[in-house]
Length: 294
Image 1: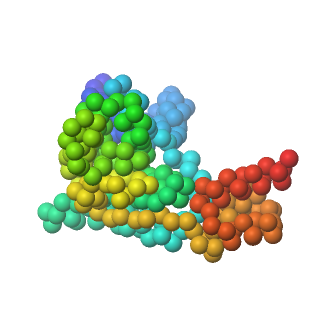
Image 2 (image 1 turned 90 degrees about the horizontal axis):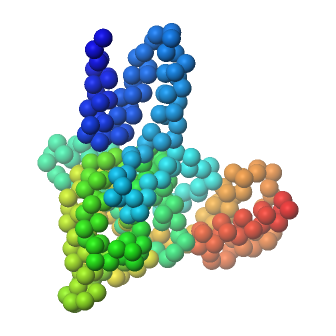
Image 3 (image 1 turned 120 degrees about the vertical axis):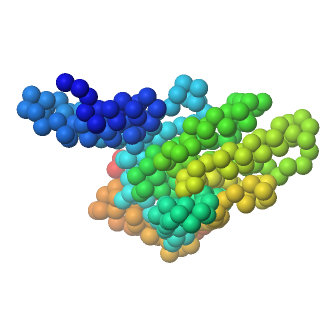
């Protein structure tokens, strides 16, 4: 008995290192097998393929340590508060995903790229995870501070390796602390020259991505970024601390997701009227809950 079309498609995807496509074809093979003797096995393997990891593509050995793949299928949406600014930004990104094909038909290049800037703790990285979760795609995370610290001298080469692998992959590519690399160019000698060359390599890598790929970059220092690099981003958004109204809504969302029986006490109300980053508020609520349950 020869291979059917589904088996051949699975083998082809594996041979071309398209791991996600291979898993999808394997799931279809499980669904198409209606023989009694394989019933329990196909149900078992289908469950393994669908459980969490089916949206993750596997990293080759030479990329491990450079990029981190995270499974965000278990993202706790009930605990995540989407402020008005975050909601508007997600809608823009989602619209970009839907309109990419039409833009290609018009012959207009379009990269779904976003730069989020703002002080630490305002939820930039968490928003990127939420975006990947809602769009149902893998979350690929690159921290440039680690890349520079560990691989100075080879950064441009490693950057190209990362982008070449992600090219065409359906994922949210999160570029964290991009200001560690994408600095305004000036001097061209020593460490400054290395960073300048790396900034150029980063821009070339972004230009080489496939239209429609979802790029989210984050920085605490947008003012330090190279102007030419800034032009590579379709949209820019500054994440700020929530005002009192959204702060209280965030607190209610978090507390209800933990235990609906928790009552917002006066001390929490007083805390919400002060100015805090989202990360500081979550830390405060965790400490409050620890005291409550201890």
